Length: 377
Ligand code: PMP
Image (cartoon, rainbow, N blue to C red):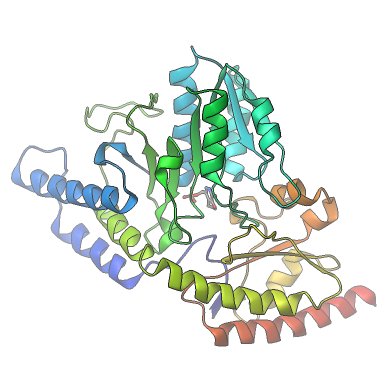
């Protein structure tokens, strides 16, 4: 099998799974219980939270555990909107967000919030002039994805922060960092809130994190009883939390070396795919090397993906969360409907080997030529 859909989800790493299993077996107490078993679980969670806060360079009370990045995004946007609506009801997002952000925006509009979509430049970066112009005194939040899940375009969050805070000091900044953690370096001081998902970094599915700066006011979306986890109540998932600490630690190891290796694989693929007449490369110079996005102008992406599957090669269409639809990100950058409806995503990992890429390129050629002939016939 050749798995090239790592941006959709990753296989859990052996060490993380071992830790998950061990904790599930040995830490049976509810961390909210007062007895010894509860205290033992609580201590483990506190240790894991301390490790995560050290790794991300934040404090422990700035970490909220959620079920994944979709929930983190919901808590960030709706939580900020509800808690800060007296200051204003205007929110700005980019045109390169994950579909979950757009769904949240649609919901916020139904309860009286106004959403503005900041334009992009040709290279996929947020248009700073447009951003500046869209920020108003009543803007309470700007949400901009650190790395776009479809095209890999990485935004300069530090500069975005400077612009936002200069125009409106009290406006908060959220970033969906789901596709940047474990791939490129991040600095949480560039933002006030950030979303993460552990299944994207070789951890278990079903857990995410929302980073929230201590000063940020947030309204919980779920209401429960425990005071310590009042922003996201319910029994804390001890095994998932402890596995997350391990997954984050492992994902930050060798970041530069892994990126250099992945860049080499990326260059090999782009060089070869650029020779095909009817393939358009949708990455820009700001894309990270882990995510390659192409449009097959003459072949349906679903047909191509299933044909590759026969060789046990697994690719993605735009994002797994919106399969079969137009790629909003490719549309936002290139404003070309055909191009945006024909995309395939090839996402790489440090686990990908050169041999896998060679095999991928060989089978790609066979499948492409076969399907292209059928189209032409
Ligand atoms: N944001 C981005 C940028 C993503 O890539 C994804 C996963 N496709 C999500 C949010 C949703 O993450 P989860 O599956 O953890 O809800």
